[in-house]
Length: 79
Image: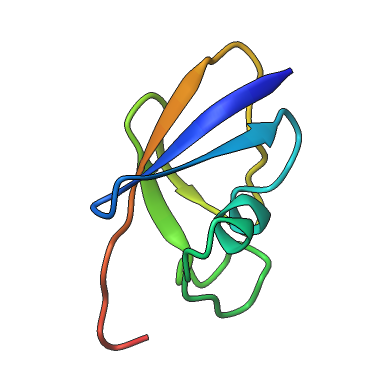
């Protein structure tokens, strides 16, 4: 099942499959999400998904049951 992922603030939209990682979807869409440990511990890749809450994109997959998910990208110049 396909889910439309909308990345803000750039208004980039891409289709993703349930189970695909948010980090992989972002990379495919040309969106750079900073990473650190790639295990969810450092929270460098944390984003806010309006319909779900704050998640670490390296360990979070596209959940079932949504037609569209909106991702608000944080910007932290220290990473």
